[in-house]
Image (cartoon, rainbow, N blue to C red; front, side):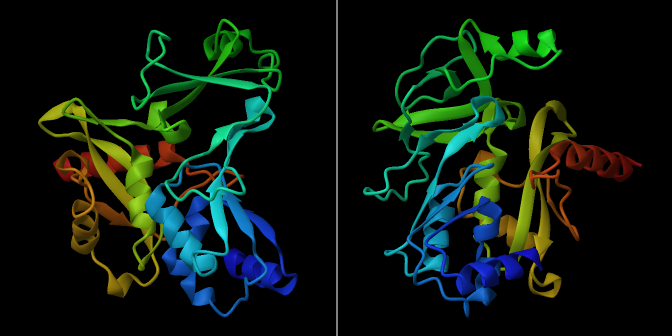
Length: 282
């Protein structure tokens, strides 16, 4: 497996720093515990949100939970790289993406581009010399992605105690009876299950109300014989508010479709979910 080869190489060459996607820091990879990470001082994640539960689990997985700090950076292709990062000398395990880097301005705004109060969720928009001027030969996309000088990231975030947190992609948020459900939150919970290797959550329309999304999890199990749909649903139910439960069910799969850089292809999963729901109606 790629992750096994990667861990072996990092252990062999005594890396002091490394970078992962959150999905690669799950308990299901603890069977690689024979690798030595005593020289690992820090690790960072990106490409997907990581909440405090997964962060704390990952800290314990890669080291003893104290000597190694795993934090998140945040940025986009359009920002040339990271625009936030944690402070190295102040480890934080709350799931924060840290603080704004130099030469960067970030606002959290509502749908009318008005700044929201601290503690309220909104879209993260950026102004910086690091931000692209636009998309090559695509003026429509450029116009849609900017509000004046501010680049609209499409990420929903929140500020708490001066630190930034990413909730999920704006277009990925589900709505259950008017309440927002972030697939990333449910995925981070699923990642902490010892029998789950990977998981992706999408919405399926509720039969009685097509405007309501029912969260459905597509799961790659470590050992399919040791975990059931009901167990996974109960695992999530015990850790979330009632409206965030996996009412759309759990589907076990051999693999989750991804693009070249490892991001989930949610559109393919949504299309699959629609086909499955359609067959169920027949």
